[in-house]
Amino acid sequence: MTSPLRPDVRPSNPNFGSGPCSKRPGWTLAALQNAFIGRSHRAKGGKARLQDVIERSRAVLGVPADYRIGIVPASDTGAVEMALWSLLGERGVDMLAWESFGQGWVTDVVKQLKLTDVRTLKADYGHLPDLSKVDFSRDVVFTWNGTTSGVRVPNGDWISAKREGLVIADATSAAFAMDLPWDKLDVVTYSWQKVLGGEGQHGMLILSPAAVKRLETYTPAWPLPKIFRMTKGGKLIEGIFTGETINTPSMLAVEDAADGLRWAEQIGGLKALIKRSEGNLAAVAEWVEKTPWVDFLAAEPAIRSCTSVCLKVVDPAFLKLDAEGQVAAAKKIASLLDKEGVAYDIAAYRDAPAGLRIWTGATIELADLKALLPWLDWAFAQAKAELATAA
Image 1 (cartoon, rainbow, N blue to C red):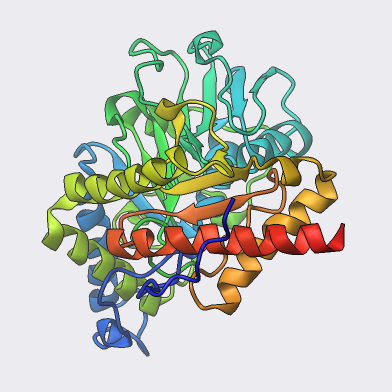
Image 2 (cartoon, rainbow, N blue to C red):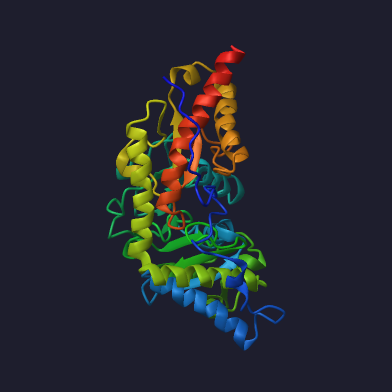
């Protein structure tokens, strides 16, 4: 293969990392100039800003009016942990895992909560477990989009409409980029730092009426830390879902979240966000189709993520390396692009197979992504030449 020439065109925005993710197009610090800072978040103005984020989120995502939406501590991780510790244990649970974060929730449920009636349905990176085996008479916990594997569930058709248990979905890299069927989901969590490019720190927790009923009628056998408690006297603490956060939020982060939501509204809402993400995935897929050295980690097109695109190197010279050598070679490609200022933070997640992970969510411009692709060819050729020299 002839080594590709060094490309002339660079992405205007090289931020292709998978979290915190790229800011919206045109973002500057001026977007935060009206932040409610230096004041109590419990003041009238502070509560109003927090409530504004909740209601804009509801509108953009199409969350039903009878679902509660709360801003909670510790990003998506905090939101998921609140759900697991507060809701599980009332009945058996099916845990689905096909990448590192899903496996992390399995570890929490089995080793920390020490639940005994747990079924774990697992799959290797690049695949989904057999969704037909999920038992919806039990609670179900899964990650809608595997951020570290680039594998998503194709839709919500596999979720029973007559479920008896709760369906808990970690949707941190799916919300605002994929169509979430609210009538089939009881708990949905995500963070601000993904599809809309907000600042980290806070998570969003969305509860269906069935989830609220569980909170009000079931008491876990274990103690709950203060930041996990959502009920008092057997009743939901409604303030959590009307802007009265459990702990002190960053009002700069709140202002940034509101800015991202206003941008989403301006470009056409959820449909436009999904279209941008899917368009970016399509551009990568077209390049992969004609590029012999690379392939998607996700085995089937229907399960390929449109936000966290994970790629594997399939060139024979790369495959001859041992696992450690493959990781080093993939990191070399990412390092070359980092040094060129072309793409930052695109090495595969540390627990995932060797390869690259490129964020293609809605804040990524298609033109920037298309400008990146020839650079991937160039960087691979450079890394391969170094491998040949070392051998």
